[in-house]
Length: 111
Image 1: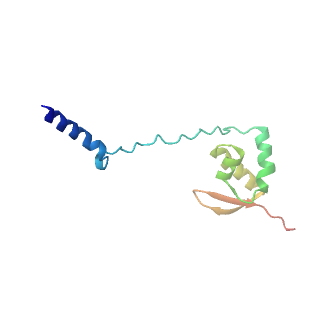
Image 2: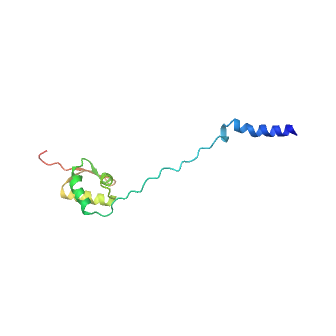
Image 3: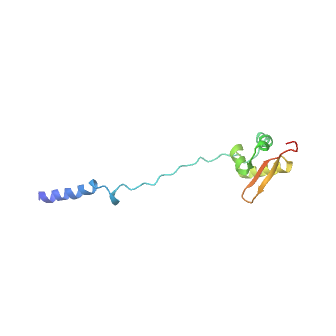
């Protein structure tokens, strides 16, 4: 009877001591990082409009993504602002692609 208990203990202890193979700890999935939701402006107000007119024409590289990042406005406002500045002649189009419009500051004839 004691031999049976010793054999049972030896069998139970064997997998823990050889902790290799499938009996090793399984990798757990990480929960992933949660990105904070951006609180960008959806309506243009007077201070934002003034900033667009003052700052954006000084940027060397102007795109929708740049305006979203720097001015904290949403994408549709950024597109409208870019179209408005182009009509005024404050910025000049470099690339017109359906996915991304790229502009630069307008250079004057004195430069």
